[in-house]
Amino acid sequence: MSNILPLYQSINQDFPVAGQDNDTQVFRDNFSTIKTCLRYAGEELDALQNSTAGAALLSQENDFNGNVIKNAIFQDTRDLVRDNGNWNETVCNVFFTNGHYQIFRLGVPFPSNVILDFSEFPIDATPPNVGKVRLELYADSGINGGIQTVGFTSTIAGYKKNFAGTTITVNSDTDPVILEVWRHSDVIFLNLIGQFTQFNP
Image: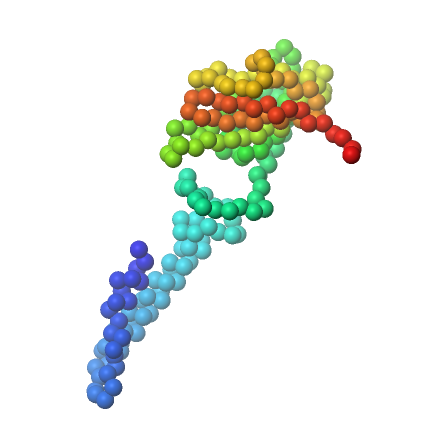
């Protein structure tokens, strides 16, 4: 609650009284209260302008701390792209908190396969929700002839997928494989959208 609300009620709005000698102390009390209210107003407005606790800021990032944005209409909004660059380790860590669109260039030497490990995806959240990430996957053309076999960790309860087998193949450093990933409860869902190739209409 604003500090102004209980304070302003002490201002004597009927003072001074016309046609009589008025006590100057009431003048001083009223002006003192008005000055204090203006100071509180300035401090509270400053807090709104400089903190995401009270209002969304137009000049910097905002953290809504998991609160629901309800009954909103979005126009001209975009997903932030996270380019993770070259990934030359066997386990490729995909962090949900890095954003909804992420790029990886995979370059693990044969005979190892690349294993995707999904971290920090929402689980058992309140209110219930899912976090979705779209991956743009390339293979390093200088390793394994530009072909990478991509598998998935078995450290969670299970996966559900829409493709045959238990791995996917990434075979180009220019034409990406797009994979959509989300987690609901103890299941990771994998939606293989496919490989995207250049064409000239």
